[in-house]
Image (tube, rainbow, N blue to C red; front, side, top):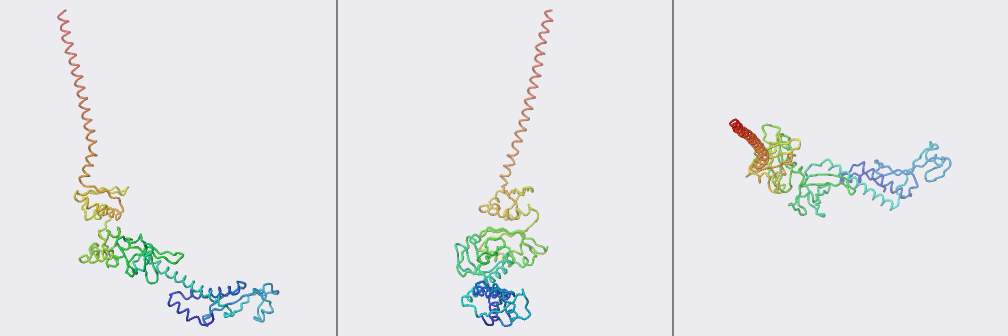
Length: 397
């Protein structure tokens, strides 16, 4: 416990990257813990690190009194004045203790406390380093699998790539390099926990930022991105410079830029779409490569009815509805796709009841006209029938 500790502290600070004040505080706490254990917490002790000599000094404090009741915490005034002639009643007198008097067990306790404090400081340092890096893409080395989750070495810390954040088609072996997105950093009882993701749309955006200078500089902005990891993705891009084509910038010469992103995502198809504030135009672009005939919009329900040619219906819907599903996520609206034939049939079905109703009205009018005519004919026949009768009566007269 005695000796120059400055060299040891400097070495630990350099190797572990821990703040010197934190380590000195841990050392003082450790020596104080050892001293309290030695004297069974019967004395009022304080520990202070003396940087000039590189030692932790332990002081025992006692109160100056006339009559001593507790010899561990009080001292007679006459005895106190032998140590400090200017001391008065009620003063607290501090006396430095011999550090060498601590037992081996007490020194071992101090060592354990130091180790614990160093670990806590390391964990705090790792947490502070990564908590502001959420949203970044990092490179790591695969260490092992734990119940389907992947443990990735990031250098100063180990991160977790959960099974739910892994792309189903991707498989890794020990020592493989992996590139992942930091989705969450939290402090747990076992230390900082860094959660990685290979399925987050942010990974797609970050990859384009690293591959496309225009995106990194803010000339081209990625307005939205959606993915079905391992299968297909769509991004909407907008250019803040009229001379820069946002789609062309992301595609690159002969597709080199987008191809690098596709390779990193292990073959995931990527559709790059020009963004527009008009929902109808945006929907037409989002459903590409399918062609759209008409779009009907319900702003209140945020619902679109999209009419496509019959031969484009399967292309617009996509495999298992993938294309329309991604398009709906990208624009944030519900999309109902119909073919031209189906739309015409529905229009005819809607118009059919109206036509039937008009036919009934015409039929009723015809029936009414027939009734009126029959009544008129009947009246005329009555008159005709009466006329001969009257003539016969006149002849009889």
